[in-house]
Amino acid sequence: MSLAEFMRKVRRTERPGARPERAARSAAIFVSHAREDGQATRDLVARLERMGFKVAFDGQIVCGDDFSRWIERQIDAADAVIVLWTDASIASPWVRSEAQRALAQRKLIPLTEPGFDRRKLPLPFSNLQTNASHDEIGIRAAVNRVLDAPPRPGT
Image (cartoon, rainbow, N blue to C red; front, side):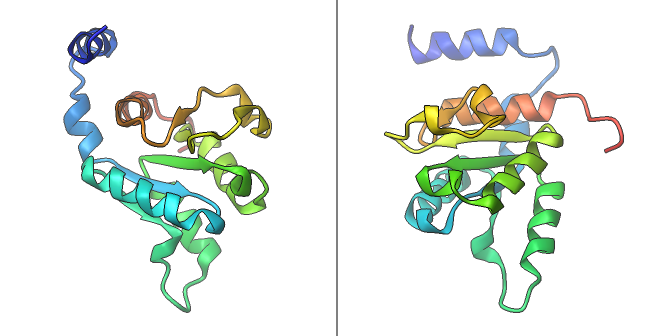
């Protein structure tokens, strides 16, 4: 299947009236990651920004900020939360907490680095479809899914 055929198929399966390209470009995304994955995170953030997304990640925290409150505010305000799963991030209680908060808000988009063994993903995240961090079509489709989801009661 060619890329054009795939995109036509994706557009046919979306809700009528949705404008996925426009909606996805204006989305605010928070990226959760392990500090040890600094270069992979910077590469992902640059890729997301080239795709037109507004991106926040903990590399933007200013000295003296209360980082836990800053992260909570970013997750709550984001349209979508990308978690970059790696060997380092699955071992991080911070990343797991951030992923759990995003999952509860129905805005989690799990990504993995090339070569990562997805069998290592912790519960409940191992039950979710996970894309590669370089899969721009998959990322855009996931952001659109999150943007089109009905709001969670009480949020």
